[in-house]
Length: 392
Length: 226
Image (tube, rainbow over all chains, first blue to last red; front, side, top):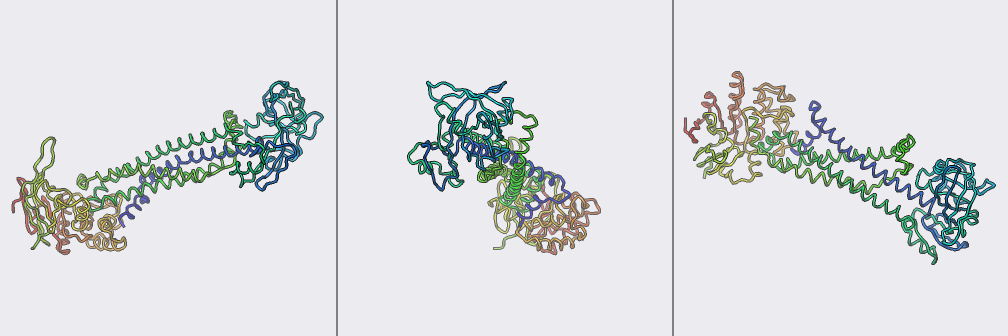
C-alpha cells in the first residue's frame, strides 16, 4: 500500500506543487523530444529506401531480368508483369547542354497503372506522336538541358561492344515524366522498343523485365530459377548492388547513431532519477526512520522514473509517427523553396513504419534507462534514517 | 524469565572525530518496563539524543547491548531494524519533522501505510487521532499552514497510529512557545497513559521530566537517578 500511495504522490503531485508538476511534464516531453527525431529519421530512411527501391524496380530494372529469346513465353502465378525491353547508353545533346543517359526501349503496354503512378504521366498515350523518333525524358533532365516538350534533341548512341562505332540519332521530346527522384530522373530516357532496336548499336541489350506479385518479392531467387527455364537471369538487388548495399549500410550506421542517442537519453533519465531522489532526500530519511524498507523505496523510485520514461517514450513514438506523415510534404516544400541539397534525396515517399525497429528502439530505451536508473538507486541505500535528525 | 521492554547493558557509543574517536556514552545501563515512563535530562551535547537513537534502532552501540523485549538491536539487520522502528517505536522529534508536501492526515498515515495498512482504514484511524488531539478541522492542512503546537500534535498522532509499545520523544516541546508547551506536555502524557505505552523522553523542561515515573541525569557519559 505504501508503494502505491507514494508512487501516486510522486506521479500525480497535488496542484499546488507546481515545481513537481512542471518537472514531470518537462521530463516526459524531453524524453519524447529524443524519440521524435529518431522515429522521424527511421520513417525518412525507410520511406526513402522503400520509395527508391520501388522506383528502381518499377522503372529501371524490374524485380528480375530474364535474358531469354524474343519469342520466350512466360506464365507463372508469381509474376505481375513481364515486358520485353531493350537497353542502351548514349549522350543527349540540346542546343546548350549535354548529359549521359540510359536509353530504354519499351513496347506499348509497358506503362501499366503502377508505372504510370510512379512516373506522374500527364497522358497514357506516350511515345506515339512524332515525325522523328519520339522520346520521353524527365522534367529534371529537360530542365538540365533547357528544353521542353516538342523540342528536338540529338543523341550519340554508345556501343556496348568494342569495335563498333557510335551512332547519332535525332529525336523529339513528346512526353515528360517526373518520379521526384533526381538520380533516376536525370539519366533515364524512354523510347519506343522498335526504335531502340533499330537505332541502338547492335540492337541494344534485349531482355524480359519481370515484376513479381507482392507475395513473391521475398522469393526472387526461387521464382527466377523456376521461370527462367535455364536461361540466365539477374535480380534487382544484384543489378543495383551499390544502391542496395548503400541502403543496408546507411541503415546500420543510423541504428548505431540511434543507440548513441539513446545512451544520452539514458543519462538524462538517470539525472531525472537523481533529481527526484535528491529532492526527496529528507523524506526518504524520514520514511526509513519510520520503518520503510530499502527495497520498497527503491521500487517506488524505480517505478516512478520508468513510468515517466515510458510515457515520454510512447508520446515520442506517437508524435514521431504523426509528424512522419507530414515529413514528405514538408521536405518537398523545403526543396521547392530552394534548399538544393535535398534534390538528391527521394522526397516524395510513402510513410513506412518499421514496427519491429520501433519496438527495438523502445525496448533499447527501456533497457538503457533501467540500467542507468538502477545505478542511481544506490543513493537511496546511502541515505541514513539519522539524516532526518539534521532537520531537527 | 521477565524481560523488560527496553534494556541498555553496558552500552558504549563512540563517534569518529577526525583521526580520533569521540566517546559519547560509557558503560551505560538503563531499564524501561512496559507502561512506564523515563525522562532523561542533561546538558546539550551530553549524549541524550545518541541514547534515543540507540533505543530507536537508528544507531548501533560501539559496545554493550540494547535489548528490546530481550532481542539485541545491535545484532539486527537493516531490514529487521526497519521492522522494529515501524512496529514497536513511535518517534516524536523536537521540530516535528512533518513532510511539507503532505496534509496533516497524510503525514499521520505514513507509518501505518508502511506497516501495510489499507488506506481507508488507516485514514479512519488517523482521523480519530486528529479528533482526539483537537485538530479535526485541520485534516487537509499542510504543515506550513499549522502553528508549532498543532504540528507537534500531528507528530504525536503519527507516533501513535501504529499503536507501538514504545514512544521515543526527543525534546517534544523544545521548539514551542510557552503557551503551547504545557498543552503538548499534557497531551503527550495523557495519550501515553491512555494507550498504555512506554515513554522514553529527553527534555530540558523540568516540569515535564518530573511528571515521568523515573528521571535520570545524563552526565559524564552515564546516567544518575534524579
